Image 1: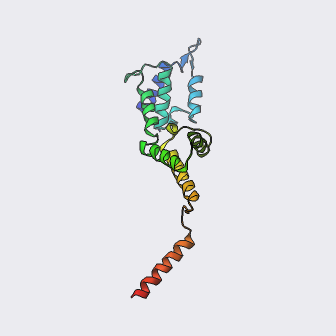
Image 2: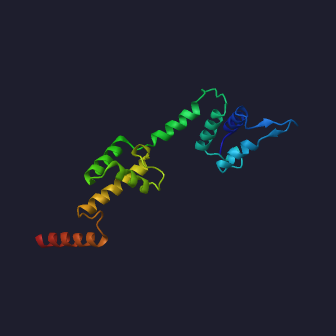
Image 3: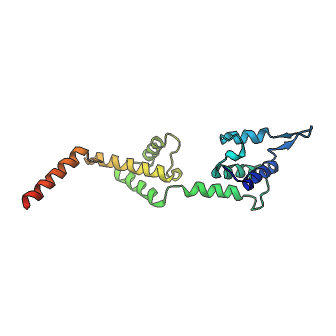
Amino acid sequence: MLNNQAIKLVHAAARGAGLITKSPRCKPDDRRYRLLLAQYKAASCQDLSNSSLEDFLAICESLGWANTKGRDYYRDKIAKRHWSNRATPAQRSAIDYLRGDLGWTAENLKGFIRRMTGHEKELLSELTRIEAHGVIEGLKAIFGRSHGMTAQPTLEQIQNDTEVTHAQTTQAC
C-alpha cells in the first residue's frame, strides 16, 4: 500500500508520460493508465507494491516522463536490481568446473540449463543465483551417480550407521 506522496508521484508520472490526458470534452482519459495498472493486478495505484511502483515509474520514464532525479533514474534502478540477482562468479565457475568433470560440451550444458529453467534460459550468464544453485546441485547429482556415489543417504542408512556406531561405543566401555 502506497503512501500519499507515492500516489502523487504515480499520478504526476502518468500525466507526464501521457497515460492520463484531457479529452476534448475536458474529461480526463485514463484508459492507458488503468491498463498499465491492470498488468500489475492493481485496481488503483494504492494497490502497487514498492517494486511494482518502481517498475511503473520506469515505464513512465521510457514514455517521456521527465523525473527530477534524472532521466533514467528508475530504469537504472530496475537494471541494477535485475543484475544484482545474477549468478555469482563463484557459481558460474563451479558450473563450468562440473561441466568439465562430466566431460560435457558447451552444448550439453546449454541443454541442461534449458531443462532446469523450464526452457526459459540456456546461457550460463542468464542464470539467477537460485537457478544457478539448482543447476549446481543437479550437476553434482549427475556426477555422483556417474561415479557410483549416492547423493543423499536414506533414513534407513542413517539409522543403521547410528546403531553400528552406538554398538561399537558400548562394547568399548
